[in-house]
Length: 285
Image (cartoon, rainbow, N blue to C red):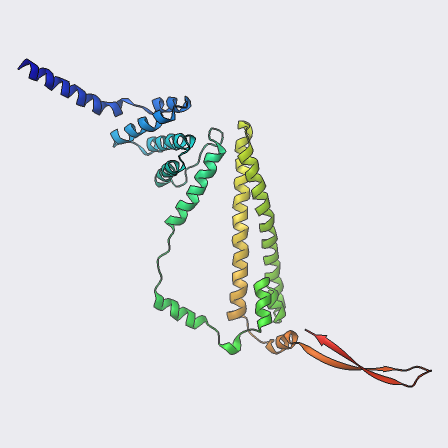
């Protein structure tokens, strides 16, 4: 009987200790392990803490996944680190790392994961095929109302050029100015973003990391905005030229885009020779 009691007490103590182990852990303990570069301990202890506390707050969960991501990245396990990033984004999609306390490479990897995560969240619903067919039928112009091929090619190369060639001067110059401005600015900020990204990733001074990151982030947003602006101007130019620009000057545009051959007579008079008449051929396109 005494042996059975001791056995029961031993089993009860073991189960109680196993259940209390996660509760005895704290974020401070895991943080100390992280600062001591004990990355396997960080992963194992944080796993116990996540499994043992069902009522954990969002802030504590974010902190645990943040430390686990750093540990996995430091151990070279990018796939497990990416999974921790996804866990962070599911809790807080606009989560921001501290650029002073975090490696720029980790932040860069996190931003790439965030871009893929947000792209996956914004999957458009499949539209009705009948509605698409009806819309295309209403927008498709008749073959006789299409601009000349040369006008279309100009518009594809540079938005606004096709409008100018078809006689829509005011609209053509406006679209051309917007397109050239957006394209030139986008090209500039593409190079500027790349150089500031390299400067940020290569910065080792903690006092300058945050300013480098802010400069890179600002250039990155401007680049994306200008690329989207040029795409919008280009798309508007094509749709407007094909569907909404009236062809009041179609005859003039056809004449301007046609290849013309002219034979012009020339008279040559000289005191030593008799008058001569020559024909000169002129090509115009």
